[in-house]
Image (cartoon, rainbow, N blue to C red; front, side):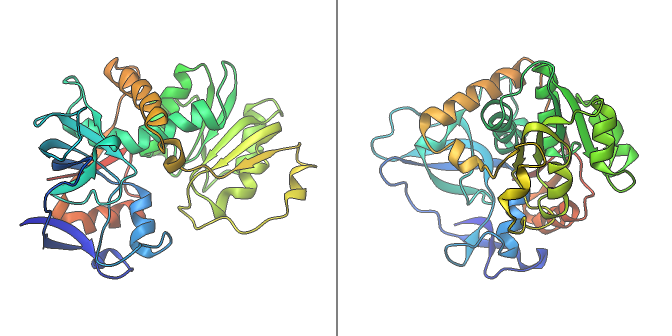
Length: 324
């Protein structure tokens, strides 16, 4: 018997329960993983509230973690008992132990701690697909990053700066502005006090940004469109304020023949080749120190509800991890 955080219904943080669960033995192609830390992500909130429906209840939330391989199932030949591994976008991470398909696991080098690994997988791979696949950033590009002081935001800003971009970050406070600037942001916009498109135009000599990476959703959709240069790309990849409402694609023409996409990390790690391309790059930049993973909050997994409350109240910066 082991423990996990489960929900039996959707709702607020109070539906998160620390319960005994059975893990069982791995099937062919699987391993049993003893986990040491999980990452906290806004997608966990979407699952808890029902915005992203669960297949069945009770359900174990959580989409990224790090741990040690304890038992191998049949036909697993790329891992060994004792290997330290991490994963992202595999629901069920809020657990002391779990079964998981070996194809989703990536070995973590000794130079990266368990805490860093737990914090970097989902957020770092999200930053990777946004910067290298959704809109491949070129030196000299100006880009707009929402939640620039958040977990994805701090990684995105550092990595974009490394690629030669001019990074404009949206933040909610002076404290978050300072943090973003310490992590690659050239300019910040206090979205509660400033008009985002107007400020973007000022900072780009009236041109606009090549790409807007928008994790907020409904509340910022129009501001993002109005911040783009001609042929610019809006990547709306999150719903912190709720999902974007249906819109008429015709509005994209007079705004500059714009592109809008709704990417998800699930697609970008759907094959082993896509997964390893992203994780190879991510591990390289983190191991070299060129991109630093900021873990600014730590909770025990059993106290997961408190972590959700802090995240939803916008009280967190950088990455939050849940230790086991």
